[in-house]
Length: 298
Image 1: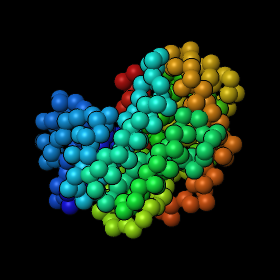
Image 2: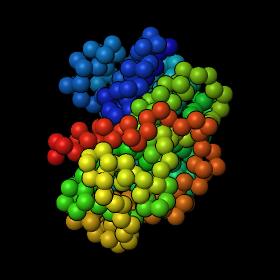
Image 3: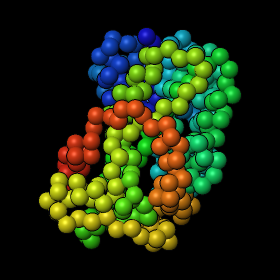
């Protein structure tokens, strides 16, 4: 199959490309960096250099493909000039227009847990809007991938762990957190891209469901700090902490709202009603090996 992957060689797109190349599919990876071209080609894929902000480029690249994987690139939350809502909305609309122009019939879009909510989901609210836009496309079969909380988000707590020996947040603690590995997401996307579908579909992806307290215990044991604790703090404390480290205040507020919704159960209510029958292979204890490597480098 001829398959198009957005996301350059990111946390999901690189293992996705490798998995598909093993199955002898023809892969084109979209990247905005010409410096990635040789690395992409060394994998055995083709590189399409361009921007997801360029609808004509996307449409041209999508044309003739059997299926396309679309994702919103990660933004810099510390950029004071970033309008995250506009950034996300524009790229989502660009994908919708490019899909329609290209005539591609099979799409997998990386959405998010909480995308069922029209409000109250913080920074991920726009995924609800993008799913609605893509749902309006006719003659296109789309899988909306809704991954849960990414393991690698735990890396942000490394300075706190080193300085205070705690993980402090307005979610977690005694409440379950459905964690997910990018590798498990990639495996699920590969399956969707190569499986026929008629219509639209939602698929959640998770690797392991553990509480914040259990998360701290697993990571603490891994780094040699068995006393590491997860401390539940207020929304206000969380917000002030994010702003103190330089995060844009509006984005920080959106993160706090998202995490508060996770703790209350609002964010994950649809997930638990439609949770995957089988969780991913990569458990938190497996991810802890990657965590240790980064922890020791800092």
